[in-house]
Length: 241
Image (cartoon, rainbow, N blue to C red; front, top):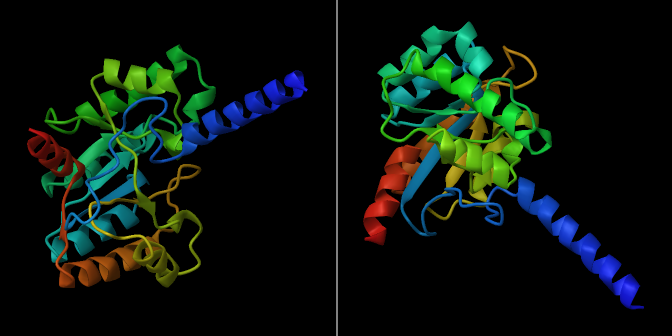
């Protein structure tokens, strides 16, 4: 009986650990930034898996029309392919962060492999951007274990996750993405969207571009302000003092 209970407890603990390794708001394996307190009239739009031609540039146009700054977590190998797009992001005042060089699931990588993925991406980024005030890192798929966050911090990066997702990597329509956000926006959220695709360069993100335009219009009319992740983190630091 005791053996069965111990076995069940072990299975439950393993399941919990597995969930925490992928949960965007889980903090078991180390502290990550996931937004501001609920009710804060700020939202942070974040985009993963770029740069991606032409959809990152189309997003830039949408964001510029509404005077919104966002945060882009970039894949290093795509940065090497399209450095000009990253230069446009920086020029427009958007924040950019590290999303590894090839987008692996880091929970299955060795410490040396994790470091190489992060360092190679950071090298690609630093060739283009000025030294950022707050270097950012988001693990692919949200997958992390203590070693992943430890390496990121050793490299000098702030780990960032998200609060709500638009599920735009499989979205059948822009309306689908918008509905996913509407269900969860309360203020203070970090919103996960995608301007590219980790499997191949050139992924179709036209629905994300459309949903972004509609969502910005909606939430600005409701009194929300869109900010970058560094702006959110700075506000959190000020509020805690």
